[in-house]
Image (tube, rainbow, N blue to C red; front, top):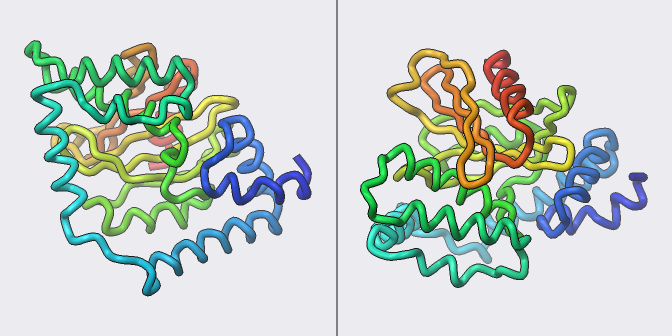
Length: 253
């Protein structure tokens, strides 16, 4: 991709309107092109200025968390109505079906263990991220921009790395809600695949644990822990790729 082609796609990339392949191509070009990287930075600065200006109405403290918890309580009684309200036309059919199945598992009152429910939530969060406008809240490969973005959005400092040299470019991050708490989600590219890495503090993650790869709802998940944090990577990429990404995180810690 040359600079002229990338320039015509930067706005769509910043607004997360491109498909996965195009997004990865633009991200790769921007990392090597100072002009396009600066253009993306100006987009980010403009959005930040608009949010901070008089046009932005601040959300009452704790409102989002209360709404999410209320939805979770309702989900314990019936299948989430939100599934039927999703813009299915914006999601590949396979992803839509997987999302529905994941929520069915998560909301089925059949005595599931908490770990099974968390797995279902992780898969569902990954599938939701593939939808338009939900992949990242901060779109950049600069780890020094993504890391401070989480300040005030989660109650811990997630480690953020760009592993472009190893084939896992950082695409950005967003805040998520998994297992009844706010978590950090980092998004990585892996050839033509996307990988969500979910991170949160865990009392059971005081010691480092080697990556463990498993399957759920047709997706691969890698679990590991480091320095009091639990990590989960979710993707349709090969299990070996998730294991490699997990070990890169552990080596970088």
